[in-house]
Image 1 (cartoon, rainbow, N blue to C red):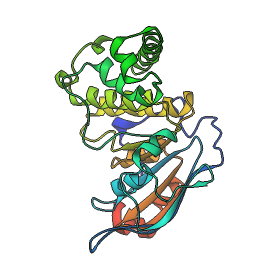
Image 2 (image 1 turned 90 degrees about the vertical axis):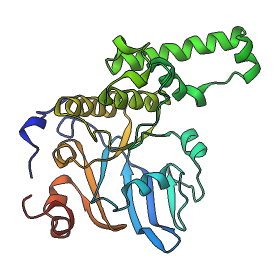
Image 3 (image 1 turned 90 degrees about the horizontal axis):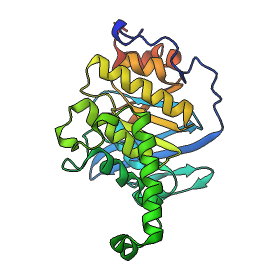
Length: 277
């Protein structure tokens, strides 16, 4: 299967075809099982993520992809299995612990503060980095003022990186969908994550918006050294930018490997890609 002509990206900066160094395993998911009552969302799933790679999770609707991301960042706690982050088992990791450990997340449905500006939305991603207490922030005392100036400088760097300087003071509710997705990416980057989880970052975008988002994802991976785990339905994008792909179907793993290995896997073809691919 090849990417559609409209999404052809010839060796962009940071792509798997360029000189990147994939490191050791940073995240290891072992025998993860998750159920909601009698419904099994995930069944005995194991795979790992290596430092500095782009790891894609694909599969049909209802395969358990978003549930897996929710397990990784602590929204759900699996009934069975273990999450090992940087060699440390984290059986009962919650969202706060995941964020503190360097795991950030974007969502399938945009979760921004629509009445707040782009800059202020991205500033919320700096929350865990702030050390001033509530009183110091409310009174805007010296240390709190200096801290906010430093955080705003970091946010301005992200705004420049994402090329959204012109809309920095615009309420996000007024922005088109593609730019809102870019702002959500900026908020996640503001936390300076080691691992970035992206849940369908290109869903609902037109071709030009997808090209921009692909470029930003590759540059985040290359320039910031961020490990990326993403869910995406556009197979052209997945095969172009991913180092490895894991395939889920009805909550079970049916394939795992490089893009070439996955697209030639008969189980994956039967369940998801189809004979046309």
